Length: 282
Image (cartoon, rainbow, N blue to C red; front, side):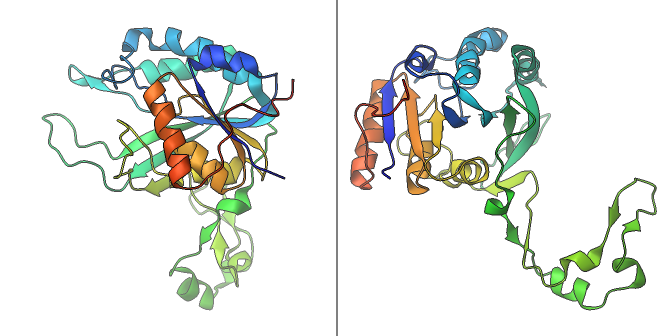
């Protein structure tokens, strides 16, 4: 079965009317942050951000399958000595719209820019907000397991009496553990902190994220030949990750030059790109 990758130019609020309800398995995107990317997207004022975003997220909600996930990469800005609250306001507004705020992942940017400010330290993380339509959604946890680490071998070599039973926490937290369950295991489930360097070769885009970031969430929330949507496509990082993992994908961007850039990169990297969608299910 072939894998489809499609690039659409336009505002995602309008372009998504092409698609039927419950079509995509994953929506993952990094929209323009408030007052950012003014030279490319014009910028949206923090006070206006929620009103700007909600008509678009309404379409995301419509086209996402009940078992699907919506991953939103976004970060508050600092202004006049304090953080703005527009991301927090957006989370509350999305819940009112019908989304479940299921989880929050943190992207630890291992090579963040150095700097000094009078009242804070440099930003080394960004939010990856996970929203769903229902509490039962597709999640392939085994697809993102990580090596146990060097701690496992000495810790599991000599088990004490409390390590071979479900030992309740001595601090009264209610949590228990059975260390013996981890003997001979080589892999463990990751935390909700994702450690990745920022994209250094940013493909002429003002805010490209690393290929490994969408790749991680695509592995986690989709299967082969599922459909992935990036409604603020930029340089097409999500589409390249989806294609490499044999997922169908659609990228939308309002700027002609970014659509052309994505198409050119697909040609250079010998990915298959479909000019017009062949199977949108209508």
